[in-house]
Image (tube, rainbow, N blue to C red; front, side, top):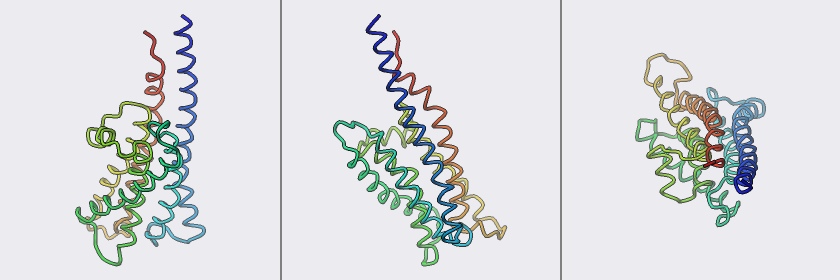
Length: 227
């Protein structure tokens, strides 16, 4: 009985600590986007319609440090990987992911040219801060974890949900956001990458809310096991 009681107490303590960290992760990552829009509008006088390259620059430059610094606390094998190393992995993942997103966008029909170059680069960095940076900080170069999360889409724990769902939400949202681009509506928000960015932001927000909702049941099952 004492052993079971001790396990329950230890699991409850770990659950509280992890839940507290997850709450702040979702809160700060969620608030980073409106803060970036506020800074872009009031200090740079730019938005996604009038100056997409500047607005996207402020968005990813605001969101990226928040995501990397917070996700590094949830790194895998913290005994072997220091916090600074995890943060460094997140930074490397940012640029590697941006290259992947830029290449994918161009191959799928994103316009190429000097007019769109900065917007494409900044959009790719924003998408990478949503998807690649947190995964790189948490999992590092573990191909098994990357494959499980992004290829098979089989999150097995609370941390997996926190990494997987916002990333998938941003990618799916950007894909849906690209649908109005070829339509002959002649609206300014149909320009690349405005509607794609709006779709990614909506998808990211939905993924964050969903991951927070699934986090607590998954976390409780992981830490509290009564035979």
